[in-house]
Length: 271
Image (cartoon, rainbow, N blue to C red; front, top):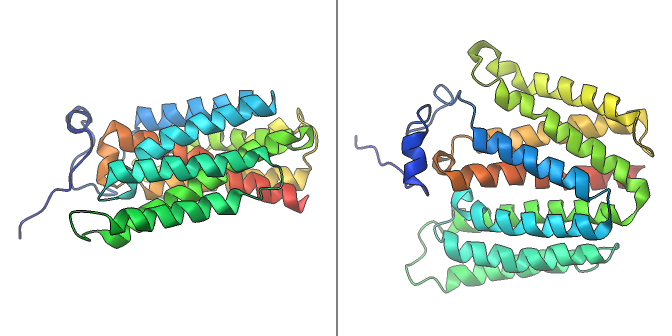
């Protein structure tokens, strides 16, 4: 049987990653990917500094991260037309993030709807047929979901009362990196989810004493959900061929931070 090697977006990166080989498998995927870890750390710290500082700073940071994610996600998501999909995601993502200017998110759903329409329209206008149609549409919709979740972090910057929730959420994301760093420990790999959960909760309990407006139950719930979701996002995508390249790793790192915005917003609504 002939094995078909999927294309990767950065061949030089593939040659440089000695621990990564096609086809990827859970057995060989035990190395630390510095670009993923570094991007998560940089993005989470940037949001920790900007969102509580002022709404304008947080909004700008989220908007820039949305553009980075839009440019890198289609290749990792498996779109057969990554360049066109990146344009669609950037245009619709701009509308979604702009909705954060209004605290009631009136235009947020409109931005998501625009993105879905543009994603279908882009597939209709493809000159090369419909190969990979479903996967391309799923990649576009998944990307829109991540951008919409990230925009909620900017929304939480409207009120000082919600800054504590943002801080606890992003601290849990940083704590989830323990799972990535412990990947080389083969015997521990099956239990990394539990390790991340425990470390994220501990980090939330430590952070909670330095922030206002976050109860004990909220801190534990936010940390458990955000830390687990962020780590799971990276692990689910870990075996994608695009993870051999820098673009895919950057998308996984940035996306795993933006995706927790929905967790923070949910706990704010439940407060």
